[in-house]
Length: 179
Image: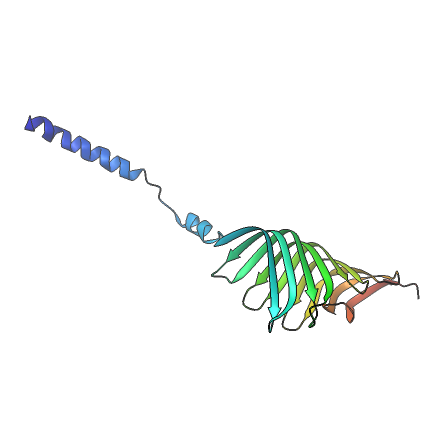
């Protein structure tokens, strides 16, 4: 009987070794893929950005990814940003396909199919837009098209403005005005 048991021990050890070898081995590429995954995901999100306790922006999106180590958020699909003045009165809205927010500085960059509509009647169309919360400026270095409340349409490259789009400039303008 002992001879039979001793004959089976090497076989059982061999089976145990094979079973342990079936555990997945993660290579360096897989570690990089895991490192790029977000720490948190959310759907149908709303974020309020404040400055000294005063609401400066409401941000909505269908999807959010948060990366804690990098300190930024990625917002995707139907991104809408509503800007407010120091009295928390609505000033303008931004629509975009995607946006990234630096959580440490509240610096935001939106990309793809951007439309900015101010409550004063100015509308901006561009492909990228940055918002510097500290300076309360929106700007881009890309091509822009602007329509005004007086039916002017202006084109150019590069744009800077306050958030309510009352004081704006096109850096390299071209276009036609009705005046």
